[in-house]
Length: 146
Image (cartoon, rainbow, N blue to C red):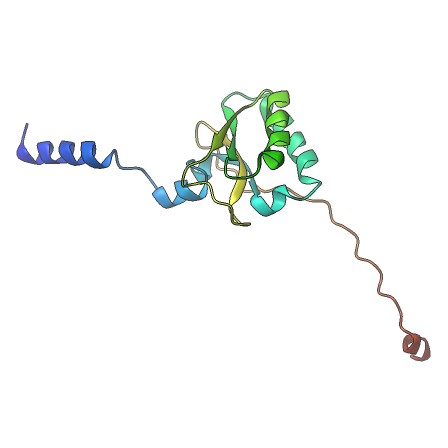
């Protein structure tokens, strides 16, 4: 074994094996963007319609092998428990991530449905139904304009 190889092995043992795309892994709860089928932010998880929309997606992917749900473990259990139950009902494994990759900022991810291998879905966000805009109320003076 050469001195360079020995030096590399010592550095690997001291620092751990180098990780691919560490910034991306920090953002996606330890996973990679290319493996994500569904991403829900901390802000979205508080919306009442999110659970119903997630149930539909989880049921679809629960029929396929190789998917699991990553859950931000730093969120309140009252927020994440319904999603754990939905994952179980859909036949999906789930893991609570409570390390440095889990953040509590509104833009950070609360839930990620990930595959074992790259799937490269372009659209990984939930699609919320459009709420119709309320008609603008007319003022008293609007009646006099033509």
